[in-house]
Amino acid sequence: MARSGAVSEDGSCTSGAPSSSRRSDRFLRGLETASRITFVSHVHPDPDSLGSMLGLSFLVEYCLAKPTRITRDGPISRAENRAMVDLLNIELLPVDKISWHEGEAVVMVDSQPNTGRHNLDATCPLYAVIDHHDTPGNVEGVPFVDIRRKVGSTCALVTRYLIEQEIPLPKRVATALMYGIETEVSGYPREAAPLDDAAMQFLYPLADKDLLAQIRNARLPESYYESILQALQNAFVYNRLMLCWINEMDQAEHAAEVCDFMMRFEQVDWVLVGGVCKNRMILSVRTTAPGAKAGEVLRQVVGSMGRAGGHDRRAGGFITLTSTAPSAIDDVQAEIRRRILKALDIDEPRGRRLVPLREMLQNLQT
Ligand SMILES: [Mn+2]
Image 1 (cartoon, rainbow, N blue to C red):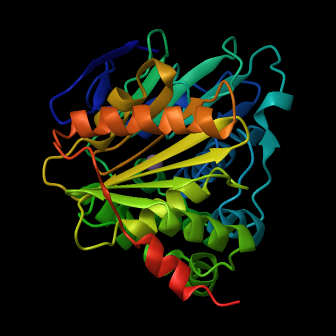
Image 2: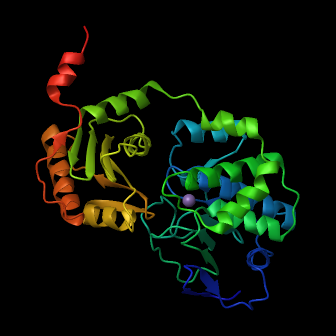
Image 3: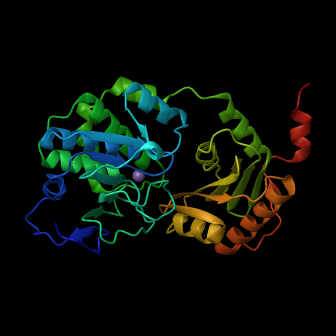
């Protein structure tokens, strides 16, 4: 199997194999001698990760008749993602409980090694990395690499493999892939490529539309509304940027959910949400600004305080808190504020509250 080559102009990585060979052929060929294939993804796997793992595991089982395992790194808490796992019966093994045996192969999807987005054993037998993130990882020595940064979803890459192999797709797999792509490309501005649209067109007739609707409209826990309320109470506008603070979150994924909600505010084109979850401040960024690089901005803001990564429009990360005392959290918030105002060149150190304090108090009914 050829070693991975350089990232090409269209953002894809090409390996040294002959160009007549399709990616899916090369991917499968390298797994022919594997005893078992395990799929891994990033922490708190999202629908794109879950759909990609399910799609590839079906590909491998169908074409090579090998046993496969699908894993999860950390809990899945977002209501829609939990509904996806439950309704599609996706069996997930906690990645920290897994041990590797002789001859096994690991396939990483929707993320790259050494980006700090994993709790994966560094000695695992990594065979392949299939991803679309901007966040650069270290793929040196990985036999099969398919990274296409212009594509909106990893599920679209996986769907392409399945189309190439002309495999009859079960409804469950098609539904998972469809939902994975949908969640990645439904924001505005869209982060999608023709490959995403072609994959959706292929999957739509095969997917279970009722199940998709049920997943999309998953019921939400009380903690979701508590996080929204806290964010509204602690939302500050600095020119075209809004910062929202959540003092305590039950679930790390509430930061992203709140960020999606706040980003619709017509007066801003950048939103950063920081929410404390256990000993971490979870960060989420969204932007609609033309030419913006959310992933790079958040990496710059977080610096050595934590880890971050993402795409042009959306990014996520965390800072490990040395103390969760209110004064320590204030300090971290102040540092984030200083850094993002600088990164976005906003000369307005004093923000205004989205909802004035007086109004908040007046509206409280006892
Ligand atoms: Mn993705």
